Image (cartoon, rainbow, N blue to C red; front, side, top):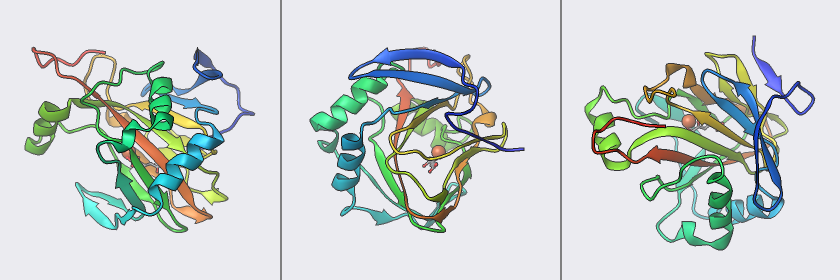
Length: 221
Ligand SMILES: O=C(O)CCC(=O)C(=O)O
Ligand SMILES: [Fe+2]
């Protein structure tokens, strides 16, 4: 059975960091590692990310690599990540993960009522030609940080069906999850989806954290 985790649930606090204010990680699953980070973004940061994206969105009504996404989105262009507010967001991420130059640009997605992203893996599949080429280019997508830029009236949870975790979008909260196991192998338990929005609008910003390839090609943590 799926469970929706909120502040009222018993929480296991793994780690805290302080940039502007204390930020804590709440463990939702150990395998795969999934954490909720309440209040990761300030209201100003959420509004900035929505405002700078809202006029540039393109429909992502497409099926690519078997993933169906029916929202609207954009990938930030070179330079757009250089704004002080975005840099501050990346600095907060750096307390938890290693953001290198090879990381892919941040993506912003808006889902209107009825829109969703079907279940998928964020990792590049090392067994496919396309996947191994991308691992060579960017490095494997070891983990993902998904930030909720607004509350959603109903629906729009991020669900991990293999482990029965459902995360409710709450403005300013983030979810950090690992697409790879601690030994670097891709983790099929990281399967996830953006559930259909039942009422309201959902805005998310996503940063994929790529791991720079070592000379040996062996992934490390
Ligand atoms: O919108 C969500 O909750 C999930 C989106 C997602 O997993 C993705 O864009 O890769
Ligand atoms: Fe994803």
